[in-house]
Image (tube, rainbow, N blue to C red):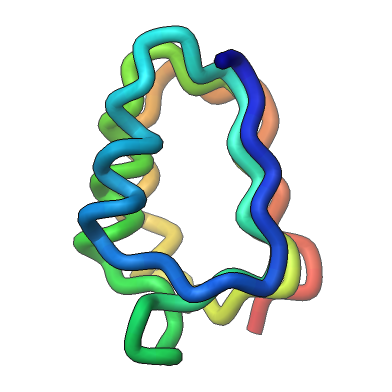
Length: 88
């Protein structure tokens, strides 16, 4: 499984962890997704995504992500594309 696209869904940290641990995952799009409690994705959740070993493309359009939250993605050294369009 190399690419996953999920739209307008509430995700728990456990679900994000399972997704991020997929060894062949290269592209992840979470369009308009929120945490399981309906709140924006947390820094802890974004850190799980950043730990994905082979992630090259990350798309988080229509997500509520602050600059501080976005900084959590800095460890994701393999990224060649980051989409935060329409992020609040």
